Image 1: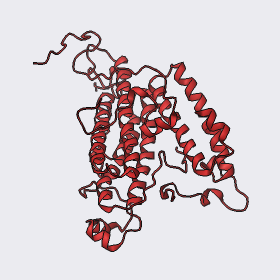
Image 2 (image 1 turned 90 degrees about the vertical axis):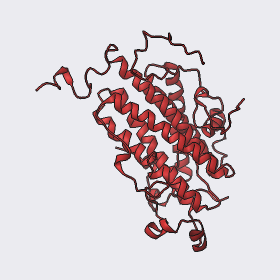
Image 3 (image 1 turned 120 degrees about the vertical axis):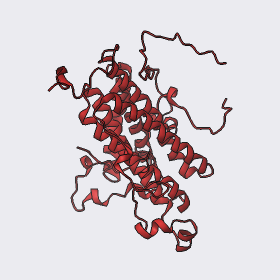
Image 4 (image 1 turned 180 degrees about the vertical axis):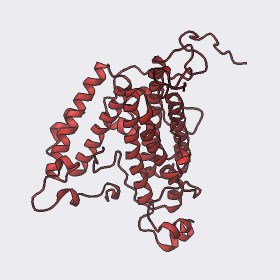
Length: 206
Length: 94
Length: 56
């Protein structure tokens, strides 16, 4: 279960709304490498994880991703607060506004809705951790791309820099979880069986 | 850093205290992930224990003076304090 | 041509697998407020985006 802390993991205080920027950053909410997918990826993968250290790490990083999901939502919420109809039309935010007004909804920057196909839960710990490492790098690149857009706006770039740094830390931890996994397997053939399925070596036989 | 936080606690205003809680809680989160993959690292464990204790104390202190940060600190008499607490995503106007 | 070190730790790291080096505990930032702004308490994990190639 979870407990809620009534604060953001890192403060978000944006003074000037910018609907155009909000449409770019919303990708980190519900886009292909966004926080909706990240949190669901790790929190879904942990059940089939054969090693409790690794399941524990997936839980804790998945939990931190939920805090990041809230931070990204706060950024979008504050960037679209008190918009005039004129600003909505000029910024191109009118298309989003028609379907959601100013509600926060998970979609990519290009308008593609969130979809569970944006992450995998394969039931094979080597595969899942390799995906997780790639996912952290993809999110890091997205933040690099956002940072080029927000250079002159410290209210936005400070929390984005924080979120980007967390991707690198998570990459390191998933890498270490993969090392833990390797230590439990036979280095002559890491792929001889799936430790989350072929228990006692019987899984593959009828 | 942490001694400074502890000593000044009574004088600090709400925003400063909330920021300090954010800072200490962040150290706790980063140490926890490290310990998840280094479960026998005693040096990291000492840091974790230290900052985790400070976090708990500061949350209790903050919740007593301003609003409950977690349900653990939401005991109420006349008004439901948890519901009256500000929403984190509103940010701060200055 | 770049000189790749093909003979690096062949026994410790079998092929067809990915390896991230273990992080060792070297302490954390004294200034935790700075660590918060950076996004990690570990100096060795601080790898900011500069958007430029020359970053000394």
